[in-house]
Length: 108
Image (tube, rainbow, N blue to C red):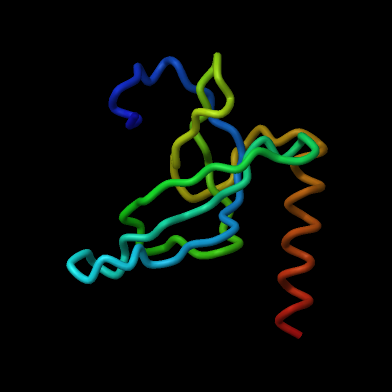
């Protein structure tokens, strides 16, 4: 099913993180069409994993994103937008801080 098959009020926004973003392999698609895999509900152990094929030039591994999660079935999720929620809880902040620190260390 697609996001459009649902009512937007059926979803909550949660923090997520892109864990892979690779071109979809279709030679007729734009290079910005990617298969992305993302983690969400970062305050859970382990976080949940979602998959989606989207047209998003800026999709890169490690980017934070906002995920739309179905209120009654947390296994139903969709890409919302790149960014960080204003209302992160302590565990989500800790998860993201650790991730960003690891990414910075890789650059050194």
